[in-house]
Length: 351
Image (cartoon, rainbow, N blue to C red; front, side):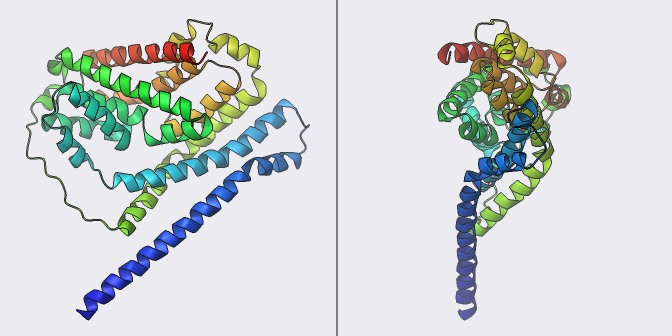
């Protein structure tokens, strides 16, 4: 009995250390975050660069945005890593199994927001969902929402562009995922899946009954930071470097003329340009921030972002393992039409 009591007390002390450490770390995070702009300006002032020049503007943007985005990303990924311990692919699959179209599409899209999975998980998730009896359209709603409306995209949009844009993006992103999945489901294209996928038979979906302590969840959050930030930091730096060049050297008049709301063709051009590119939300949002700062239309820029994240060529190559070329074409066409609609609506609402 004494040993059990001692173990409980030790666990409580360890948990208290974690909470105290987190509180101190978050406090230091906010203090440092407030000093990033003065620090960037001081660093540029120490360099042999003419004040107010294009180069000075670009370098200051890079010095300011790099730690800002990395700090925001670390905080968001840690928080969502903790949240993700309450979910798993098996639990998600079980929640969606047997759901009918309509409500199933709505549930799948919302689950995609809180259970983000990377493109490398697309094939096993797709097969797992189909084998568990999840309808094809419902599966697509999840696979559209998971990369496009993930926690990194929403967190960085909120911090860098504002809550109105982030909330509107969430609403329109969910609409694309729900409607696109519903349309694909109504077309009844199961026969366009690869034959081996159709041969997979559903088994019993078991949900792991894991009783995790808060220490386990905090450690999972830290593991998520090491895994995700460790994989995307170079994309972030590349995106910030591109954003810095745009910020410092691209004339605002030129960019607003090409990607402004008055150019009706800018939204389709942005979607076509975005599809062959590959990036994640963390890498593309610094570019989005720079484009918006130069006067590009919000709808055009977000249509570009959506197409890069949701319709990237590498994602299509991965999905080719389970989908026929015809079904991939339908997927791209339906989602692309939704992104075009969102781009035009954003330009109309925020003009």
